[in-house]
Amino acid sequence: MLSSFKGKLVRNGEDRKAVVCIEGNIASGKTTFLEYFSKTSNIEVLTEPVSKWRDVQGHNPLSLMYQDPERWGMTLQTYVQLTMLDRHLTPMSASVRMMERSIFSAKYIFVENLSRSGKMPAVDYAILSEWFDWITTNISIPVDLIVYLQTSPQTCHDRLKQRCREEEKVIPLKYLDSIHQLHEDWLIKQTSFPLPAPVLVIPADHDRQEMQNQYEENRDKIIAACFT
Picture 1 (cartoon, one colour):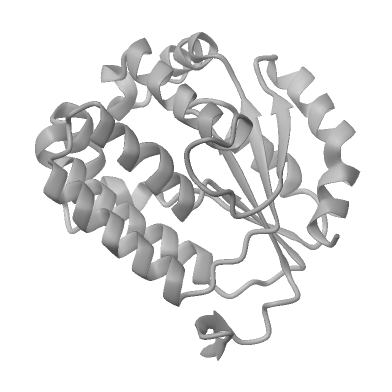
Picture 2: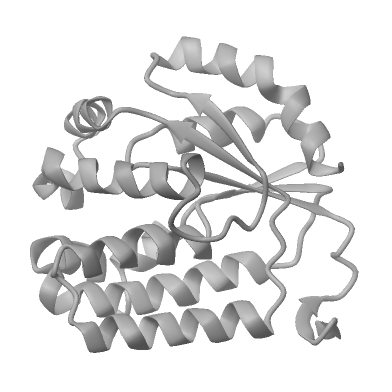
């Protein structure tokens, strides 16, 4: 159930639990990160609701957006904003929740990229921005830590080619460059948008085994940061 806390809607009894958002470029290793921590007791993981973005009553807005972002960018991002809000508000079943991305990166990275690249009309950007501002003003969306998996665009591009997801076949390196720069401006330089939580940066250009070593090395730091 929802109740009110400091003028915002919150889930009852969940203000003492911790939320970690895993941010990074496409193919930065977020799924591998979440798979690793899913084996830790009292941690729940929530992946991006990509299956919903691929099938809305038989339609695939994710694929449509990659094919024609000027026509379908607003459509997809409206649904992304809704489904990510639903992820944030889902009742927690563990002391720590780790989420793949967040409603913040949906707006600060992907909506912003569509706007800056000229592929989202100004009116669409304004409407999405007003929706986002209303949500974050009126609904409590606590985040205790952001883990940024920092990868080079070239590494991400190489991984995309290896995993061969249908919608991602049309993603050029230039697009990954733009997404990378927006992450850097937000999470490293901290010059673009406000941070909802402290940031832990993990270099993520390594292979799977080395990345698992990195996660093991940072495990205690991540858990401790949740409750400081």
